[in-house]
Length: 116
Image (cartoon, rainbow, N blue to C red; front, side):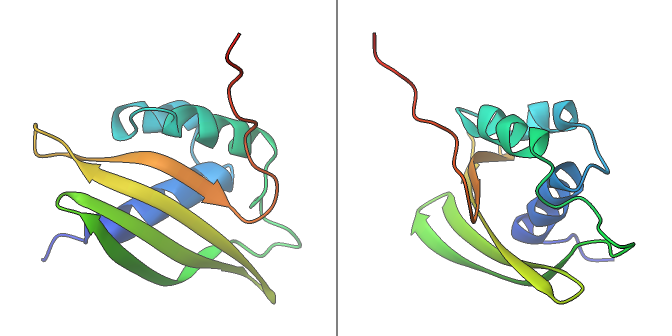
């Protein structure tokens, strides 16, 4: 059985958190940098929770090689008739593991950190 591509695997993991099927902390070892905070902020708002019994699914996924070992990934998330956009960045670390380093959904974004 072939291994799923990291783009597909991470899209499924992120969707599971954003839909409330997995806890945010399950992504701790799969994230780096601000991605965990971004994901926690998004998940708190429950943007992809099941509505009217329709569970969201990844309908389409694509990616762009931004640099060696860095992928910019985009996915269409469908729940019934509704479609949302999700984007995330994956970086291949020196330990040969992929980690999510940024995540966004269409709609409100995590406020930028303040430099005091």
